[in-house]
Length: 245
Image 1 (cartoon, rainbow, N blue to C red):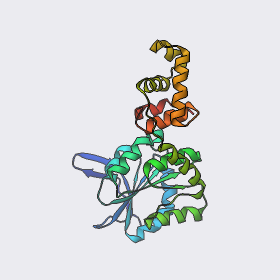
Image 2: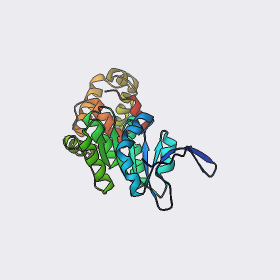
Image 3: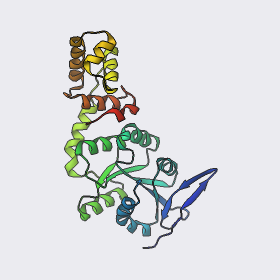
Image 4: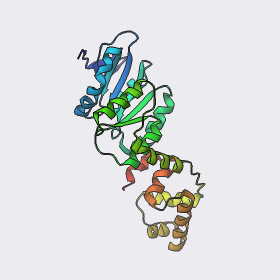
């Protein structure tokens, strides 16, 4: 394996950490591998080092700041990012990056078992490809090959969940001011009875509003409603940390 290692790169007054693999030269294309776990980086890199001989240079980063720095460079063409790197903050963050860098290929990868509905959500917001390091070697290699050939790669076992999530995001709920208010109290941990007391409304009125919210979202559980409300921008992205389940 022909590799060149560099641990620091200075850009203006900024010092950013990055371990480079491959020979950096004029015209080389950069692949960024993002994970805060060095073992996971190496695990994925064993499937990628073959492409060093094809003129690619790999930058392994562990911090969100470094990811932002290298994702914005003109020579960066693909980003492999571990799904748990942003965690649930991926909603909004990956959407932001995919819109800011429309020519950049995003590949989400899992080193652990990720629930299919969560993987589908991440894929939808990154508008990219997906691979699991728990899949067979042949499947992983085929997915990576597709990415380097500029083809989108999604495992067949995720397609149903992705279609379900896409159908959800097409929902346009048109919530009233009162309904949005109730969602805000709900995501902050208030029960329906507590919300009724705060808003000086009857418990029955609050329950009726919640029933209307379920109908408008076409979802019958509050966790699903809150997640979709965040993805729609009805609730701030920062509220994602308050969702459990």
